[in-house]
Length: 150
Image (cartoon, rainbow, N blue to C red; front, side):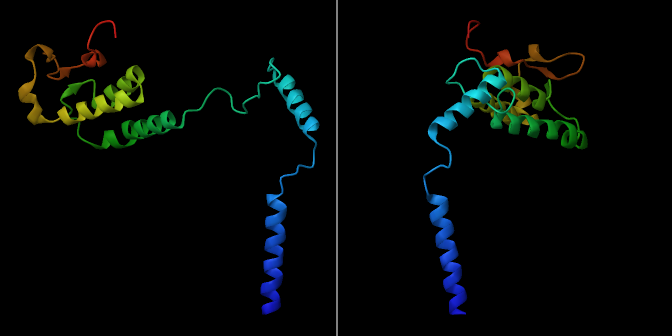
């Protein structure tokens, strides 16, 4: 049993030493030449630019928020009763806020809207903002603008 432990420790140490070694098999000039050749093949004109392997840019936060909102709008929201006080619905309004104001301000404004989306807050509404045909409160993302030039 001791021999097995010693041999496993030796294999682990050799693997650790081999994986931590900083030397590369290729020389630096070969690595640079390979990068330049790959960039020329991908159409990158500047020799110091490295081609990104994905087309376009990927924003993980935008991808997460967008997919969460899509799941809510298409899977959860149809299961709930349609009793939103506002027009457009809170989820659609949230998407519009995130597009117009960005992630930080859009989430703050979305939280404000969600706190106002109940029947108790209907007491403090201006009657001029209520749509007479649907009975819902009309609200656009411009509601949060401080000035027309912002």
